[in-house]
Length: 300
Image (cartoon, rainbow, N blue to C red; front, side):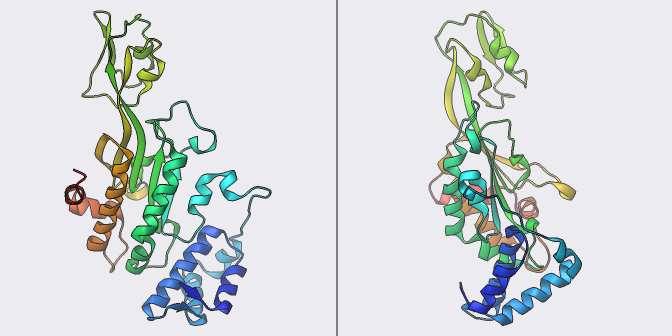
């Protein structure tokens, strides 16, 4: 959206962290849309100032200060910062694999993050959430897509609106087992055992983490399938709840129609009369609408 220069100068001069500054930008643009304006003017900025001062109070605002890393660009320092530095009501979380890689990686979080950002921009989730918001925007107003490279889930993706982590389904091959028990010892879920000289996996309880495959020295255990687990509707804090599993293992391309389905649910089900949350929406509708969307677009 276009801005009057005076209004933009005010935003640029505010001595606060970029996360809050970006939310102020989005709020001002929402007010402009409500005023049927294609440009943010001083009128919207004055209203934005009053809204935020009323919420925070001048003393608290005065304590919010910005500090920035020097010498390297945000993306060079941390690709997650580059994904989240623009005004947006979505956050993309990447596990620590984003810095240096990890020997447990089953999906590449550095490659997947920008693709998800592009999809979220195409879906215009920021404008949708802003226009439906009944209160001033805060960090908890954002929709989080959390990505971890493996089943250790360092980003706690099971407690986010959309959670993704890498998975690998083990299969026993024809390669001879030397009965070293590496697979048995490494399985944190205790679902691997040796029977008649071969590993046996209890598939009902296997978390498809791929650890047994990673430590097998002979190739007796291999990956029958690699992909990711996808969950939706998780949250933490007062209403803490694990997300509902859509897929235990699927390809990463499935993520994008799922995001489409999630945004479609927000459009149809999100309340604009009181503070709402995607977790509440999923609890009201269940996950069937997501699978209906996948069916309609030929992904199911």
